[in-house]
Length: 379
Image (cartoon, rainbow, N blue to C red; front, top):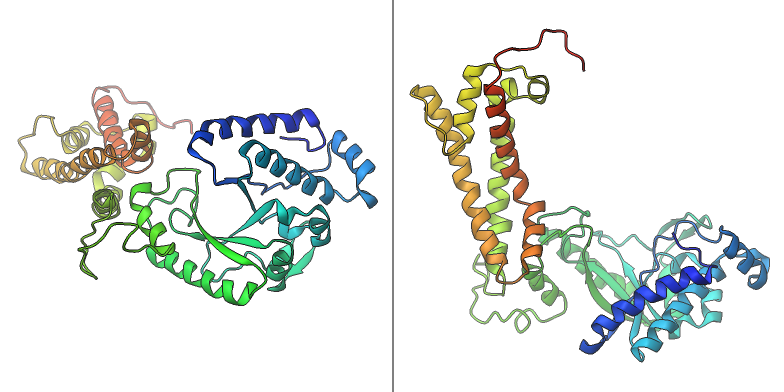
């Protein structure tokens, strides 16, 4: 939590920015995004209230927020010797454009309008802070203060924070909608640049096969991804990281979905290995033995034909996912550090493997129980 009127608090922010700039400065910093979005409450701490009483006529806290943005933008430009400063449009669209003009923010900041929907709705709706209704004129109002405006479209992971698989059709529709908005919404009022966006809450989709969509949206469909011998309409890609794309978007997605479906409808798992049975140690050893054989590849196969069929069923599932896990890790390691590979696998493939192993561990534990609790059980 930052109090905008507290100079010491603002210094903490500037120190963090300086650290980031120092790390990247030797490589060149053409653009730096300072965020400036999702400030749902500000101007209420004591220092901010005092600042508003001294500087803002009528006690309007918008001047406090805009002055803070200007201060940060100037700080960044000073340290980077003039890098282009970007900021999300969320707050800017809600502020009085006359105040923005007075502070000359258009000379310091280039706003980035994010919208990953298929009909571009972010600049319409009710402003919760001032209870105003925005129409398409909101675009022209923004353009009147900012000579350059960025359009942030979807190219990966922009469906929701924990998205795993790409949705090409949705992303394509979003990008096409932005083209229409650029023509109709802004007209000639501002120069509109393009930046693809994805969520950072989790590694939604791996970067190596996200590059192809980025390059396509930037207009470098051939040169950018170095595809010179691909056949249109084929499933063979030649861009860097296509092997990762093929394994995860194809094999892994289909296999994980299939395994989950099979486990969720398995009669014995639903009955003798239900969460209730596991928690209260209620089971039947004959079925536990069967399930142990079913899940563990190395467990001694039982002689009964029925149990061999169950074991073969689960071993078949394991035989599908384990090679994918191995191959995907290998391909990812060609492009990413080990920690990055582990993060991606943890969020995508590992859960289904862990689910199988959990069934195995619980089955082995329950198989050693010889005395069962008397009902009724405490819930």
